[in-house]
Length: 92
Image (cartoon, rainbow, N blue to C red; front, top):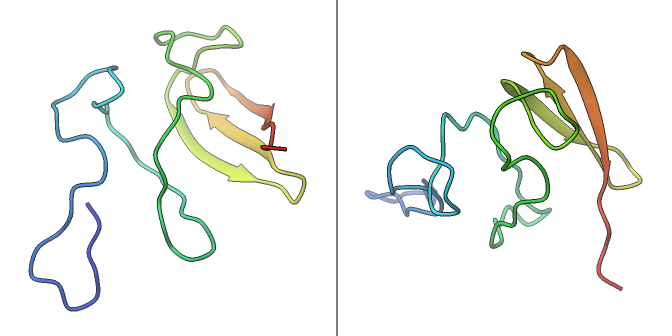
């Protein structure tokens, strides 16, 4: 939910379709990022989405994420006992 300053109601920006793995669903989300203006853009699956596990394209209880100054994404995977780095291709 997004709450604008002084708002009496929030705005649904993601999920809201019950627990699941479809693009319109979430399963225990615990983090999010916005751009430098505080906006959220349309989401795109960039990794995961292949069920839980420890393969390079899976997570097992991801608990944190961060970007470095080069645009690489780091995901702390608690259940997988690892931190994975992903290079994010930027639009040309």
